[in-house]
Length: 464
Image (cartoon, rainbow, N blue to C red; front, side):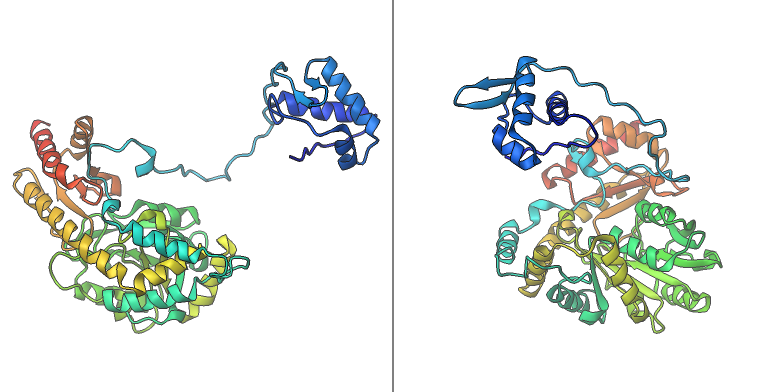
């Protein structure tokens, strides 16, 4: 193992070697029992006379930092000074002025509750890991995907083509390979869009209640984020601020209420964007899982003037760990978005993207969606029935996705009391709503515990 030490500064060479080695021993970079290079080898590496290194070793042995074993070498001794506490800089580095963001809690940052109704988590037990492992392993071979080179920032060509076909039959979206930009999930897609479209001070309209990470991301880019109310027909277009440059919406399955934007409201939003020369970011995050009703055409398909950017993800249909999503954008924005992707992180995981392309093209994604969709439909029906039977709750109609919302009073208090009983459910108020209620995710919950968890929640609701 090579030993790298710094000889910066002035002074006699033996002293500088001694000081550098002693510092490395004291601060732990050279651990107890570590064998040092032979004096001849270290002297050659440092460009010094062997005698300078040998004298430094001898001094460290005499002071107890090293121990020399005849015929075996020189080792770090078990006795050393306590490291000096690091000195705080007089003016430590801090976030830029105005940065007020801290990390949001995630499913991985806390112990998993017994009755897990948290949102945004699909059921990993439904995923075909064996098939996926085979595909990824095949793409990690030496001659696959040119592992010694840099990939296209827009994404693996086979995946872009597969996504274009996939959204065509699953979401009624007409797209070509050239329309697709592969991203590391939805949040990455929104970041790229914000970089390309927004200047500090620009107004971004978001749904309220809505998706907090999107609001926080646009605000972090210096935008002025304005909440717009949602009713039973989706985003209230008449309430949009006239100055909005970007409108972020979830029309297929509004998050978190679960309603679908009506066709009339969709046309009104597109007309508003055309007149105001604004962009619409359509986040279609989980509409593959539908339990009733025919889905309406996405805004992207209805758009005839190029005002809509369509964002999708495989985090809900497959697994969050895949970190793969995509953007379909108007032609005028594609080059800028690809450049933003290249500037932000270069390109994505080529082997994963190539494996996902095969996963789609071999029909395995479609089979997985059918299997998972049946399981989720059963959970959706059980949750709706249980919540609908409680006279203190009003279930918001929904026909897709991985969560159900119910309106009800004193939600923050009930959520806290339920957590003490092992039931994790989301408070509607946490999403920027003036209404009180509860958001039940059903991807993470063990189906065998679902009814028991709902029963405990109902008891807590009655007692609180």
